[in-house]
Image (cartoon, rainbow, N blue to C red; front, side):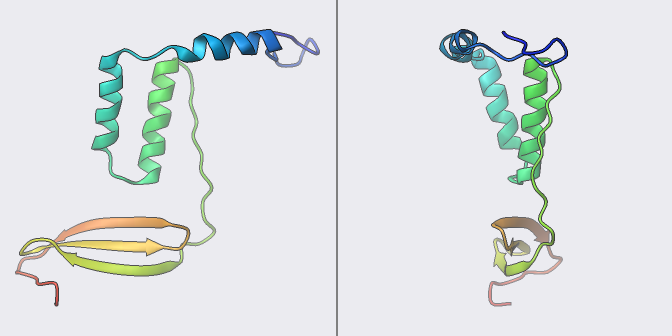
Amino acid sequence: ITRPHPSAGSIPSDKGYRYYVETLSDIELPLAEQLLISHLFHQVERELEEWLSLAAALTAQLAQNVAIVTMPKPANCQFKHLELVALKDSLVLVVLVLHGARLKQQLITFDQVISQSE
C-alpha cells in the first residue's frame, strides 16, 4: 500500500492489488451462510429497493463495516401500463408498469368472486 501524501488515503500497489485478486477474492462463505443469504433474498419482495437494502445489510454484517447502497431516483414516475389478473375467485393481481422498467405488484382480495372479464 502506498501513500502519495501523509494526509492522503492509501492506494494499493500493483503487487498488493494482484495479491488481493489472486488470493483474498477467492475466499468463499461457508455453505450455511450462502444458504441463509439465498433464503433471505427469496423472502423479500421482488422490489429493487428491498433487494438493495438487504444487500447493504448483509454486506455490512459480513464485512463488519458500514455498507451504503444508493440508486438514482427518477425525477417522476410516469404511468405506462396497468394489468389486472384474476388469480382465484376473489384474488386479483394488480401489475403497474412505469416508464424506466419499474414494476409494482399488489395482490388484492375482494369480498365477492371476480372473473377476468370483470
